Structure formats: structure tokens, C-alpha cells
Length: 141
Image (tube, rainbow, N blue to C red; front, top):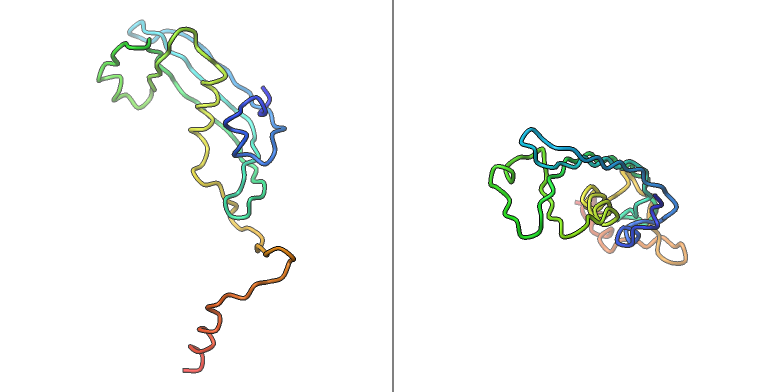
């Protein structure tokens, strides 16, 4: 599936030409309750929060989901199970929306390069820090 299909995700990317591969399988657990297993893989070009340039990021999501009908109460023991996430489903499952939600939840909070090139103001001139004078005063003492 093309990355451009995800509207909410597109604002966080510098390039929308990537492809996401996913697999959604359904079965039942030991208690005969429905369970979905979602696997998502791909590569995204996120926007670095320091330099605003592209940052390649490998996407890898593996989640077990417990579908629950809208309005149905989720038992406390299912809420405490860290291996399975309960998701409320109203009507038919919107797979595209589910994929986008899971991708957004998997993204880093503030994607950044380990080291970004020095940022220069418009015109390319290096702006001197107003605090650089203080370092000169410190060296004289």
C-alpha cells in the first residue's frame, strides 16, 4: 500500500513515495474470542525536528488486537493484558484507518538525526551567538 494513502501521516513526512506492507490475520484465542494479528513493515522518510530534512526510519509493527463491539464493556483482565490491545469496532472494520492509527502510534515522538548539519539563516551567513562575548570575558579572568 502506498504511503500517500494515509492523510494524517503525510504531514509528518518529507517524502510520500514509500510503500507499506501489512498483514492482518484473524483467529480465536484459547477462550474462543476473536483476535487479530497485525504486522506492518516499511520505510518512511520522516521530517527531522531539528533540521526539517528527511530522516529515513524503518517501520516495524507487530500487534495482537482484541476486537470489541461498540458499547460492549471490556473485562478488567483484558485491560491488564499487555500482550493484547482491545479495539472498539463499530460496524465494519476500517482497515486503512486501523493501519494509519497503528503507524502513528509507532512513530517516534520527535524524530531527529543523531547529528544534523549546522543550520544557517537565510543567505547562508553564520550568525554569531550573542553569548559568545561572555566566553571571551571568562577567558580573561
